[in-house]
Image (cartoon, rainbow over all chains, first blue to last red; front, side, top):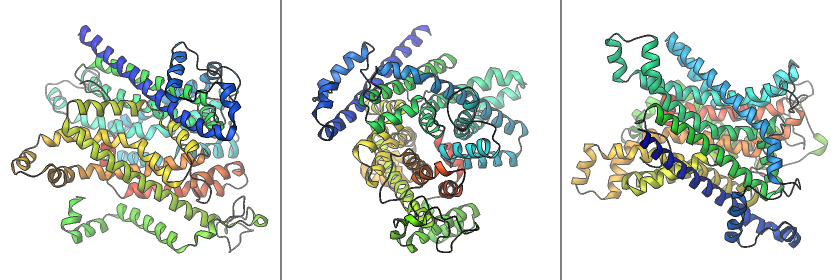
Length: 306
Length: 286
């Protein structure tokens, strides 16, 4: 068991490193091609003064060499090292996304369990309908609606900024609301699949019910699917953070990304893309190890080796 | 609804659609949108009247009959821009979904059919796809390589393609294990014929649901891109861009924000209405 777990972990780590390398390579290439195009506009001095390599491959090799040592170069926009700027913006995004993820998870679990416990056809149909409606709303519209209601009409909460925890309430709500429908729909389908499986019927007929059935059998079978959904949502969260932070003008990584893309801050863009990829990959790694620990035979999503 | 019914018994299929109220509503809204689009002059969405800015909509006291839904910050007619935005959204949604579905299903079935190393490659593509900061890549590509409609369509399709690839790759081995496929192989059908006659019809229900989901996803992605200021710009109007323009005056002129948001919402709901929702969620949970 331990040996298999170690092998599995090693496989996942290799995959993670490969994915991060590929993402960094792709981003670097895109940026490099475009800086060549911008060179013609901005003139030679940008290239000379900021040391942007002209040959893409050797440039990438050099970038990788520095990146492994932890230096991602200077930001053209901030005139500081990229890492210090990212550190400055990291906390906001971390708080925003983690609070939204926890909130969305709690909320959707509550909804799905209520729908199951009531076992009311009308309630579950309405729930699915409402989820569909929210699914059809883009995240930024949700944020604007929240600003309109809570900041303007009711004047309860600030509409923008990151001063104290008050200003985090609306963005977290917007992000969590954008996430909840997907979670509810997937949880609903998974729960129904597990509950309709043969083993549940057999256990019930053997007299196992209530907490023991749920904790010992159903949750164990439910968790792998749920965890993999969570790991996928982690990537969506970053996307959501870009939008939510722009709507609420928060100084987070998402808005930093948008600003650096718009102003052509090449080093920052590559560093951010790598950072996002590392975040996604490490969440995926942890989740897959957890799934493996819970049920070694569960099929994991995005698993490289069978 | 069985998709194959449309090809075999079209009249029965149309009857089954017309008795389903939800689907009828969705199709009606879509049809209305396309019809209104065909009727309106596209020049209207582009003409500026700088001395006629921020005319309120008709239900307002100062509303004008000339501009039913008012004008925006450059004096352009909002109704005309909404319709032009519908055109942009529909083009982006339908074409990028078509590209992503065709490419994804083709390569997915191929990889699933080949198995072994090819399946490994499919898994790797999925892993990269899941780890890729999609919005960052999209922002980069749109911002640097231009913002023409065609390019936005291609990028959204490219970013969403692995999703179709992985799902059809996952479904194919289950299909191949079935008896009727062995029968088809014994019947000396070519691989192409097997794909068209046996594999595709069995994948179609899932693909159609995914297609609808992808159309809405692409529309919302395009709106998000233009909201962030990196989407379709210039001549073509886009709902996301309209919302971004109107955001600064949301307190005094909320309709400028609400109307495009409502349109976006109605369009995606009416597309989702056309397919069976349970099937869509089952497919998206795959």
